[in-house]
Length: 92
Image (cartoon, rainbow, N blue to C red; front, side, top):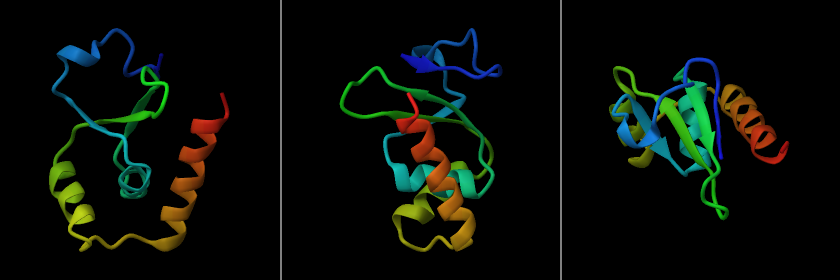
């Protein structure tokens, strides 16, 4: 099951290259903290949820910096983003 917001309706996950996908909660929280747009949560896999972001300029470099441990984000903003994502994960 894919949770859709208004911008995402009518698009096919398999055919889109305009989206960035990750299963990583920490990376997703960092992306939200930086203002990247979370489009949807894909719950097709019963064991884990895939986070879907609208692909925009700089997202790949941002993710690379996250994995290289060279990314800096505001701590409280990151924590708030993490709480929001967990609420979305566990509210259904």
